[in-house]
Image 1 (cartoon, protein in one colour):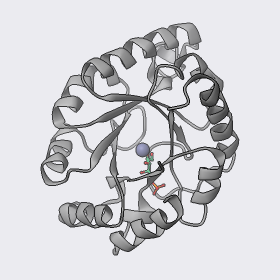
Image 2 (cartoon, rainbow, N blue to C red):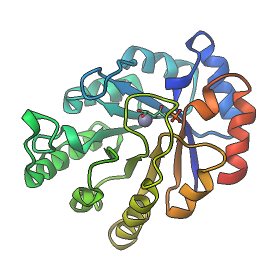
Image 3 (cartoon, rainbow, N blue to C red):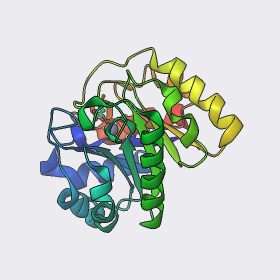
Image 4 (tube, helix red, strand yellow):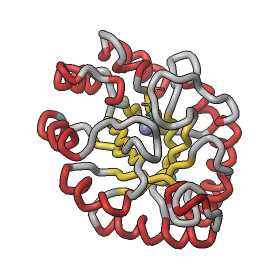
Length: 234
Ligand code: DX5
Ligand code: ZN
């Protein structure tokens, strides 16, 4: 089943409940929660306090995307705040070429990621892993049997409203082929620059979970914008 996950990074926090109710009415099942630490990505966004408020005012599935340097330190707090999915980045794993002075040691990164996936599952959440556009998708191969979702960044993480990177389509196709072999239930989420006029290409490539920030929550009529996406996703 295709899912629309509006990203609240583009929301008007002065009327967040109205916007969350509107996207739900428009057919969205998830709310995508872009947690940014200002270190792994340039911007600082929001964290557990806002997540608690969102969970108190909406029953949408909270899909937490942690663009943070130390996701393992936040698992319990994110679960307690009410998230049902926690997605972390491959690149911040020791050996994942961002952390620890850019050491590139895939075996170390996979070992750490496998441990973190277990920790997320133990906390009662589904586990997702994400890669930035320049990270070869193949690094995820050993993890595909164990994760619930792969999040393909189709923009450089850090800001809403950027342009979709077309090379993402081949990566989505390749990951879907790998999942068909080793984890047919895997969700593939795509995040960044998704609009009504390009979402069909992303679905055809094999994605089934669509993040849309500015295209749904930027400006007014969020319900109609969500509905326009659902006419394509349904
Ligand atoms: C960017 C965030 C994306 C962003 C998507 O780093 O991870 O989720 O909010 O926003 P749009 O849909 O406006 O590109
Ligand atoms: Zn995101």
